[in-house]
Length: 350
Image (cartoon, rainbow, N blue to C red; front, side):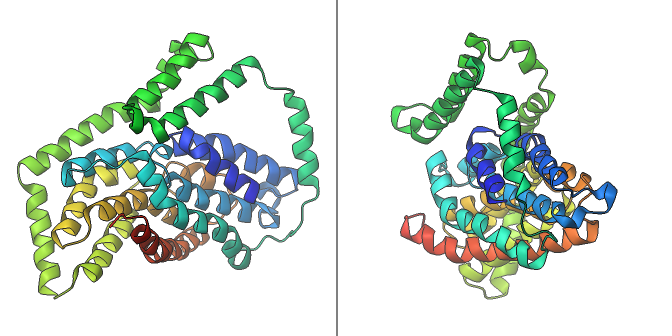
């Protein structure tokens, strides 16, 4: 299980689509492993191993998507909205560093927690390494295209991490990687045009950013923020408990959303403005809301891009999915706001 979890985490910075990464790459791998071990919903053996593995890989994918700006398509939207709201741009390194410690703790702890709360019937699977070795041998050595792809991804991720020191932005870094693949013929422009969801993301994000800007310009966000601040102030709360209340409202309101991007576009700027108005540290507030905009997808079977395909595999009943999602959400919040806040103090986030 840990091999799947950390393999997905290693690819997260380079594949900015959780649906493609977790649902398109790791779901087939996970299901193939479960089937190879004799765990199939159609045969009534989903609890043998599959239910535990499917739940674990899905839950940890929501963590990895929150650990890097480039791990989920909507994260750059959070960065842009935060820059407009607090006048400070979150860098790739700041986000990754802030999320690293609490994120790694969650990645290590979640498989253990689920092993206790939702254990597999089969505790050992000696056939899995054999099956993996057979499949690897079928693939053969890396082709030249695969080597170019690996090199392009490595350069792109390196520029995302260190590019700001040389004046290379995130968009320019992505263009370097894409141009390399196009020039070498690994990817064709026709294949790029066929990526409908990517073009949808580009179009909708532009609209969401413009809408958020005009909502702020015409006073809706300031009005909402001042109203919430008045309510919080009337309760006599200091910024710390006010911070907790606002973050919890933001997190659990995701039950009403079927998209992280839609949630961010609708609520991120307003809630960030409220936190800052209550006296919370601006950068820490922006990072918490940005990271939680991914993790809150753990709660339902529709709340984030990887949820529908994993739930649709049929290994986990709906009621169990929601119970596990809510229970782990409490653990995630406690970890990031507890251990995370100490870590952020140490690295100078606030």
